Amino acid sequence: MPGKQHPPIETELTVGQVAARAGVAVSTLHFYESKGLIHSWRNAGNQRRYPREVLRRVAVIKVAQRTGIPLAEIQAALSSLPENRTPTAADWKRLSARWRDALDARINSLIRLRDQLDGCIGCGCLSLKACPLRNPWDELADEGPGARLLEGDT
Image (cartoon, rainbow, N blue to C red; front, side, top):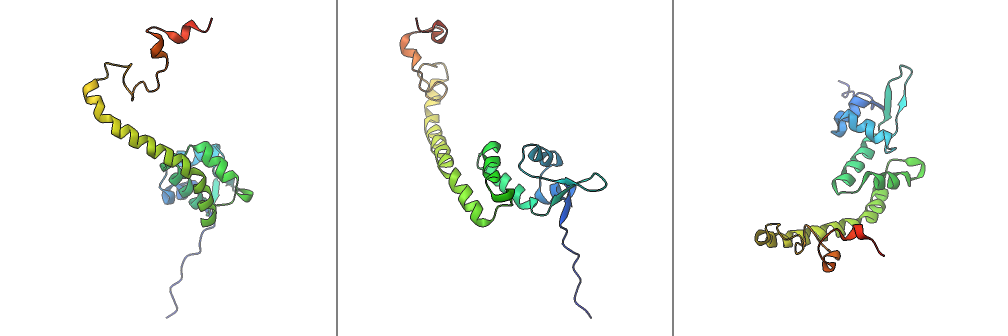
């Protein structure tokens, strides 16, 4: 009995196949394409087709988004790859290192925010002048009440 035959690996995927396999909506793929994050082509029947490698690219985009990286930064990082190729493990290591400092800064900011939340119970958000969460770094408060920015420098 001959070995089990596996279906051939598809090198071209429809938008529906990519959406299902990547776990995103078709509209998300269209949006990513409009932003230059992924690319497709049209077959003879004018149907959109994607290379199989787009699945890894979408995975990289989703992971980067989940860490809070803006799409513009993701697009810039992906376009820095030679010929806009799909990122390899080495590429991902290099790209993610670029985002590490920003991610660490966001983490530290969230930790400070968490640690300041207990002060809100007593504040009740009635004191904008003293609230470090709602009105941080209010340098104009020292100049007195009113619309200080509208007066301008004379």
